[in-house]
Length: 228
Image (tube, rainbow, N blue to C red; front, side, top):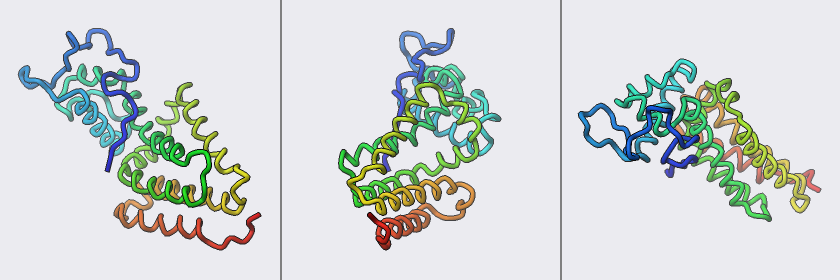
């Protein structure tokens, strides 16, 4: 399943490595391997994110240090600073992966969404989110740390998604009963996946996905009484 990146891979979100740690002549810092060339910047950044995701999830964001991340990768801390200015930037990059799901999905609905298109969107979301199931566990176990990440730009990003979401569900061209079911179906997807790390941790992703799809189908295609 395709993985979505949300931040350019050449540098950290600030684009500047801390003084003294910037690589000379644009060279990528390498692990302590006797001077041999390390992996490409893109793959190195991905590895940093994956190891950080594992550590943040298993032992918590607050209890994980950049030194631990570097040691797990066999890197120096300078190699991490080349890609991320701080530990918070790593957490933000992981968090923004979920934003991409929402942004791309809402954009795919176009200007004239229908309940049918909404169902197709949720179906795609289920697949992509289950592929990134570890991100939901990360959010569930590190809620305080993630709340502290809400910078001005990030708040604006949240608001943009919320505005688009409300526009769709406030569309008078869609029957009110359908809009209510659309909102409930979306809540079912997000609720099940948000709890997938602990409450539903024993369920394999394919089984959880099938159950969520059944719930969504029931909500979207159920009795239409009350529409107006």
